[in-house]
Length: 130
Image (cartoon, rainbow, N blue to C red; front, top):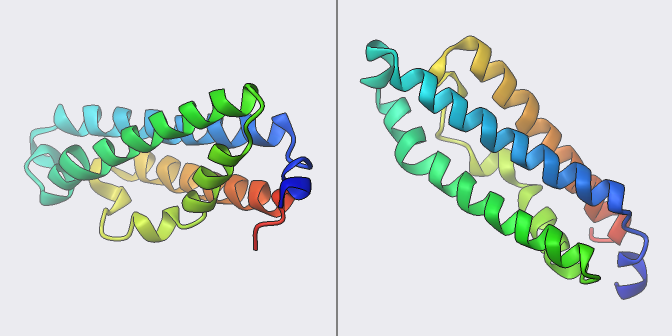
């Protein structure tokens, strides 16, 4: 796998990290917007995002950022571990309805979630991870 990992490009890694960061930013924005709407803020879906989904995404984003820094220092393995994990992001987010903050945020969250999974899969494919 070491040889396959060398085929991972900085552009692929950067795309993965930036896309995941954009997903987390959108989730933060969605939570903030929903918090300002009393009707949305009272829902269990909002509470689940505020108290569970967003903190997990923020933690994962810190791990991706750390892995990105290690990649830039020459260690590809941590970013591959993160990418391999994020291939299952859609499944991991089951139970957290994207509509908690309205249709516009739901659409953007869905697009970004798909983009994260796609970039994670591309990164893994480049490294030869099945």
